[in-house]
Image (cartoon, each protein chain N blue to C red):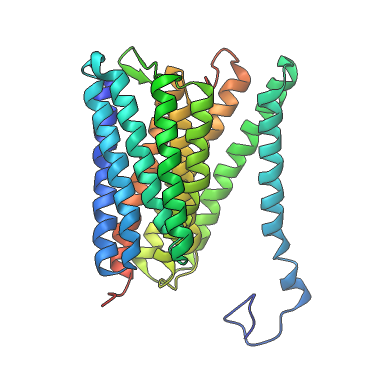
Length: 220
Length: 118
């Protein structure tokens, strides 16, 4: 049984459902710029689905990691729109810088830090080099985490129920931490543990979208 | 009406003000936790690392229980049933996540051969 395929496929599907439900929310009940947030998670979902199919075809493993990294960077650029929505100039500057740095990262990945993933007992271990792991974790800490918190704040801005803001911020924050662990871990028990954590987080996130859709008033 | 307790029309009493610093305590605990984690990652002494991991594992387990209790208390005070169930759900889900993360730390503390694998 290929656990990696099942795990990545289910998680990718969960990410896609989360992105879709958030996109629907952004269309009806949240500021429109938050659609970028949904696009970022669509990119992440696609990366996970690609890894799922790579787990079935080992010849595609290395390329799948590079494609996954490109999608992760693409998602991060979408999130820059969320982070710097208030200031147009900074937003454009950050996107330009983001694209340039992304190209440098991919060039580094192709020429100096080629991915070395492997399958172990049906589990896909990314085996990311330390420097790449630090860069990817930094992207999560400095872009995905703050963007998640901005989204949490925007979602709960019109919900005047005590504790909701805290609950949303917690889920969005802890999901990012789980994602960092998942990318950084190299051993099978740790990968499985991080996977379970990430799965629980996204079940909470999907449920949070359902609750928000019921509690938020329509925008238009 | 005041900023700290929006539903209260009377001035805040000193006893009520004493409640607020507890949130600062949480921040300090989180900071100490992160410092311990950093020390553990970069230290070469196996014995010290085991002790630190044990302490952090314990910290995490207490934090998990504390989180569940906190979310249930929050949910208990909410009128809207959908929001109440959501807060309970986050309490249980979040508690499990904290347990798992704490469990990782505690496991590594006890069985050093299970490395983080960074």
